[in-house]
Image (cartoon, rainbow over the protein chains, first blue to last red):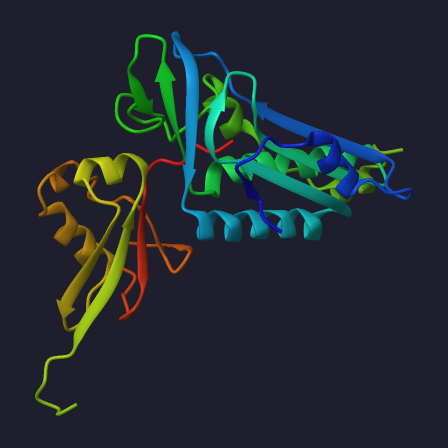
Length: 170
Length: 88
């Protein structure tokens, strides 16, 4: 199975990979191509990857989610030229209950952004193009979602087991 | 190999995205006399035309796993220089 794909991501097919009668909670995250970045109009973008390492890293992340929570996870990341609105990354996580599904889905997208060797070149309406995260935006580690740097730092994976012991989960 | 011979070490270096543009190439082989670390390879690359625009401590991977700058290289290793990641 390949985590990196060049064709459009079929979200329905991805959900079908994780759904089953015993897993009633299904969470899905889609990252789609935005038409603006730091106040500039984006018309198109191109993702490239260090393929073998990106595949290996995606596999490790999905396996980690599966060992932390009782979930089944599917992940796809698109490579190549994408148009505005296209799905760039899709994650589906299914579990018996919603908590694990949400937690696993969040964990996978955060780790993908942090660890998987994928790069994004944005083409702007003024005809210029730029590698996101390289130069110009000193200090930013390639965040594709402006304003999200802070929320990513604030993100802490939560263990469902810890909440169980508090009796906060029904 | 006679004990007096200096053993050489050859690694394949991969460059991506902005780093590939900076150096104008996406792969290069580096050969060292004796041992070398990731840092030694980076220094060699930074001496190439345009190489001064590479950061002194870029994110690096050897054989598909992220490594530190002091990681020793072995002959046949694939060293990849990874610009700031932007997936997702």
